[in-house]
Each structure stands twice: as structure tokens, then as C-alpha cells.
Image 1 (cartoon, rainbow, N blue to C red):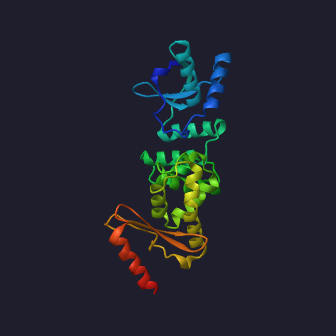
Image 2 (cartoon, one colour):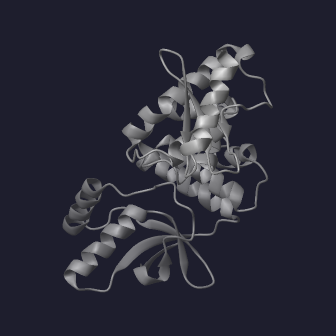
Image 3 (spheres, rainbow, N blue to C red):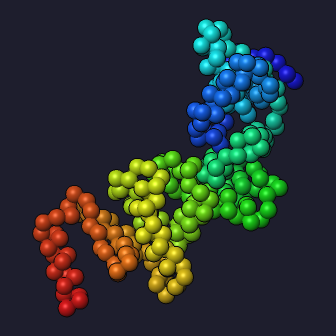
Length: 272
């Protein structure tokens, strides 16, 4: 059913979005098109106890709202009223529409899988993946599931992760499965890098070590992580593989003075 609704009655945050940001140039282009030709495609919503929840059309809703503010009018928008049976059905409709129109990044796709799992309808990421992408090939489902595991662990630590490629995210996923989670998290937490490019360069030695471990199982025993230690004295000890060998890095408020002298004495004793 098609209706014209006041924008104030539509909750754009009722569903977790698979779009982490709106491209300013694309939004300006759409806004100019709507100003000249009107809204060609209505948005999709479903009724709630307090109004309506947005399923698809966040960019269109934003553009119409901006135009109304510029014109000093009350924003209204044409909307199809849908009746999804479940939250999963509403999310699946949003995902399908955005896959066609927006082509979301691998991170954005996986982020919705985690949100659906966290909604309580599904116990695992595998089940949430199958619900959102029922027609995906097994290979694509596995990739989405692995990237969802990266989102689960690193959401909030990575800067603009939607700019990471699928290959980069799958490398991170493989490192997490190789029991390098603590080292990756600690590396990001103690790094001053704040762009996707600089963070990736910071993580590359860790990923190289993880891949070396996967290719040579004798280098690491599952269940016996040795990469990150967190002593109660306020010191984080991290090992890093470099081109020339290994480096031990000590950070934290107590990584100085007599404690470090004792550590160095012990290293010298072990290696003679």
C-alpha cells in the first residue's frame, strides 16, 4: 500500500542499517535529482506502535528531509507500507534492496549478520547468515560468516572498516581463527594509527606471523597462545615477527626501571 507520510513519523534507526555512512557526493546528486524530477522510487516502511520503521530508502529519506529544510516546508515522503512477519524478514528486505542499489561493502554486509544474531532470533552467526542470504552459495556464506566474526571482535577498533576489501577482512578472519585475537586487539589498542591504511600497515606483521603459523603448524599449538601476556604489574608483552627475526615489545605504565632490568637479565641468562 502506497501512502504519503510525514518524515517525523518514520524511525530510520528502528532497524540496524547495513549502510555505515552516506556518501556526500551521491547524496547531493540524488537530492538535486529529486528537486528537479521528484521522488521516482518510494521508500519502504512498516507500521509500529509509535509510527513507522524504515526498511529501505535511507538515502532517499535523507535527501527529501534536506530539501524540505532548505525550502522551509514540512517534509513528507511517499512510502510503501510493508507488513514483514518478523524482524528477520524486514532485515532481509533491506539487505536485498541495498544489495541491488547500494552494493554495500563486505564489512557492512557482515555487520547486519552480527546485528541479527544479537537481536536474539538466532543463536549463531551461521544461522543468521543463512536467514539473511538464503540463496547465497556455500562459498559466499562461508566468507560472510568469517567476516562477521571479524566484525564481532573488532567493531569499534578499526577506523572506517567499510573501506577494507574482502581479501583484507578474510586475512583478519584467518588470523583470528589461528588464535591471534589477543595480539590483534592489543596491537590496535596500543597503536596511534587512525586511518584504514595506517592500521593495516600496523597489523601486517601480526597477519604475517599468523599466516606463517597456519602454514607451519609446529610453530603454534592450539590452546596454547603465547603472543600476548598481561601481567598484573601493568605491562603488556607482545612478540612481533620482522624480516630479520623476532622483537619483544613491552608497553604499559610499569614497562620501565627495575622491572625491565630484571627482564633483560633473565633474557641474557636464558640465551647465555
